[in-house]
Image (cartoon, rainbow, N blue to C red; front, side, top):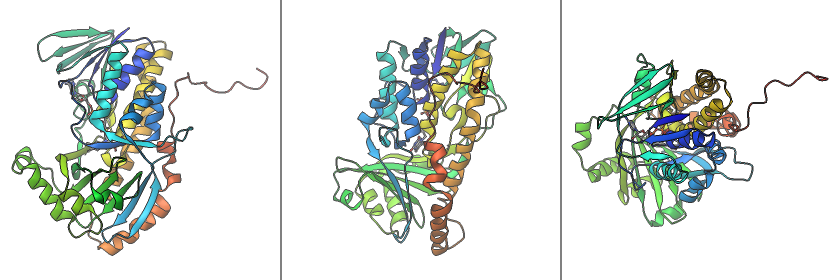
Length: 403
Ligand SMILES: Cc1cc2nc3c(=O)[nH]c(=O)nc-3n(C[C@H](O)[C@H](O)[C@H](O)COP(=O)(O)OP(=O)(O)OC[C@H]3O[C@@H](n4cnc5c(N)ncnc54)[C@H](O)[C@@H]3O)c2cc1C
């Protein structure tokens, strides 16, 4: 069997590794030229995602390019601690979540797909896809075409493959936050932040997150509530002007946020944040979608990449175990849909908690303290990060005793 995988982000190379592992020959197509892995923002891979990577023999790729993150500590604009929770149920050997760059992880995974012998093609943007009952075809922008028995759309939140599988699917939804991210290198301010923790600030005008690195840098992001920033508005300011704008927004909040941003460098700016709550169809004939193409949670969930890695394992094991491709794709969707839609919904609630409402700061802080004490806790979140996808076939229902 031969598969074409569209997209060299997280879901695409993970799917390619998983398909290779069950003996499916794979060609991976990525629109952009090969990246050095240093563009864009930092993110955290939760233990459930690391476990999925482990099943693909690729966990060390993530741990080698990132640093461990154990907790999230939430504070209000005055510096008052609102709550604290672990970054998930560690793996059996104690491994905790890992913070790295999305593009760094994507580059490492794509490199591993190539190292294991698959055909990886960069600068290969897919322009059209077609499916028939027993095969699928992609047409690249350069006019060439490729055929395979299966087409996996791992082409992100603005997926072209999704639009062909489900033409009625709603587009991704803007969550009311714009995203900015950066790094402050070799800064004395790193010492003011506890190691291996994200420090989150529910600020007066923006939400701020910072994490010290083992090298003495601090990586950070700012979520700014407001309408979508258009390409013209984005281009109207330089990255330094955007950084100055963030410093203004953070100036009245307690803690090192404004100083970190003022002395740092933006790596991502004016990025509109979207999620994708529900796509009615995930597969049609020989086409299927994985990762953000099927179910993008808001970044506030901290789960998008981990869910993409889980998808890859589940899709490959379904293809290995089912009697036909149709059966496999149906089984994949039915095993994944409930979990991912629940996480997308939780991510949407988390995003809206970052948008200051009409209540005053003191009331909001008091409400958030209650939320982190009774609602969003290690225990209530264990189903998310404690989930472990399986490589072994599903054992099925237990046989009656004596059988
Ligand atoms: C600011 C930010 C912070 C985040 N933080 C976290 C976090 O802390 N933890 C977490 O788990 N997740 C986080 N996420 C979400 C996470 O990045 C995504 O869920 C994850 O990248 C999804 O992987 P993917 O492969 O499905 O999509 P993507 O990573 O978007 O990859 C899709 C790939 O497909 C390629 N492509 C698209 N169209 C075509 C085409 N026509 N032809 C060929 N190639 C194509 C694209 O170039 C891209 O490389 C964050 C996201 C953002 C934006």
